[in-house]
Length: 77
Image (cartoon, rainbow, N blue to C red; front, top):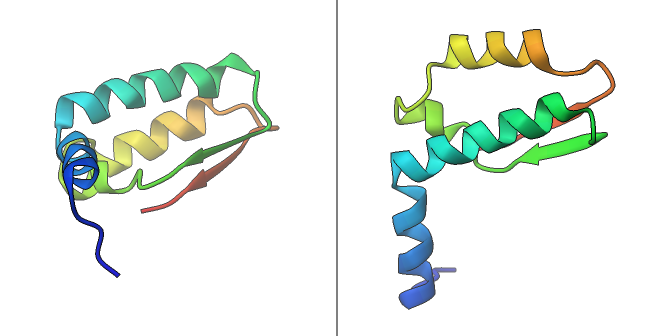
């Protein structure tokens, strides 16, 4: 199944924008450290590393150092 049209183009443009995605990662880091969540799902998160926008080792290190032990992270991509 293929999705096309203006909505798809707008979503694709946002996903392809490193600045938008890196700003979102900064917001997610705030949510991770807030202690206000039991579960966070980072959908399509690995593409930030795939495209080289985030360093995988640095990102994993940050998560390991900052994620509360009671928080469950679901990372897809």
